[in-house]
Image (cartoon, helix red, strand yellow):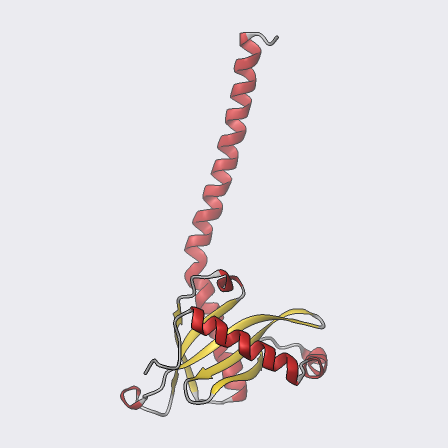
Length: 166
């Protein structure tokens, strides 16, 4: 049987250990909460660069659309506006969607465009792969694009973006 002194020593060690773990989790939570906005701005910048590469001076990336589902860990949705059309005359909403999709070289961020009149269109990958770009171009097939277009529609429906919205 343990003596009272030994029990107090073990309780003290256990308490110190629990306090350290609690402090580490608190620091991790605070850092995550404070870095959220810079993370969103980084994703918006990446989306803007990818759109500019395919559609120069056409789209402006706006605010993120909240996605409160498990999709939020691998997808992001942003409002898009046409640069050359006054915002008051835009009738249909457009969205840019970043989705992490599997490729031959591992997960890669893909960019899709969605508008209520034309549906979902694949724009390209959101990273510059340099010499490996041809691998990614050859890797993506029509069936894979169709699959991910359907997934993007599901993600948009989950976020409350549907064809009835004007």
